[in-house]
Image (cartoon, rainbow, N blue to C red; front, side, top):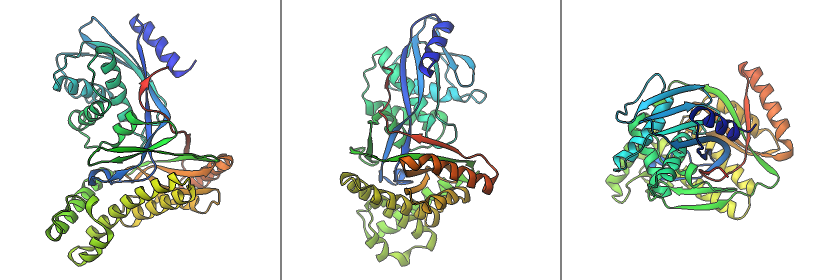
Length: 385
């Protein structure tokens, strides 16, 4: 039985009615890391790892929720929405409901079962998949008629304000606007976007999950944001048109290098270069030059490792392995850093042996199992066909 069939069967058994079925995907980011909160460019895509939702209105006067993966059932009064600690997964759902209410919509009580195959803690944004999947379902069921972009903004606010995670907009955008076999060039300032074909031909995207998440990730994330803001403050004294690092160039940075301390300059240098790399990868995709895409991925990791300093030994070890493999065009850490996955562009016929070699080497290095996922670029959140 497929996951969608299992969730549908569980729903009809538990609630005795037919639901709307929705699929909501995970996402990758091909290149463009930490550029989102600097109003720059990112290049994400939805992938074929997803969460399935079954949702229908009820007459119970309560939100009745079942988390399939956790085998956990909970009921929530639809009049009082407050963040929970014990069943924290409910916060992602109720945050979405609250945001509809903030927009003036009355959200009738409903039944919901959700479950999926997005690896937890791998940096593939299961949280955005949960938020966007429910938002799509409620928009469809209750005729709120919000646009895709409205739903993206609503879900980002749900995570920022109800869950309390200050994420950028990339994850929700990629989830909602994903297109099969395409990446999305997203301008994080204007939210203008453009699709670029990712024709992998004889290559395969492979994710290697370090299985670690170092505790300094959140504090260092906030520190990097402050360092970038400090860089903008310095540049703006001399170049008033610079409102974010997105507006800076390498030439401008070099011109005022003496105004920076070494650390702040390195942070800004990485962001400016990373924005340029995103645009260069888009050019390479138009020319179907996967070799250049791979080179830019390696360069991105080097910048994240040495200039932005958000990598870790485990990520560097895996990228180092990939760099020595003739069948790998490119690799880099993906996500906020200090753990999570590397994304690798690997010759398809060699992907199984690449994974096997990486797993053995990582086991020898860390004494840990290395989980690996081959992924395909998929469409965004939609009704289950």
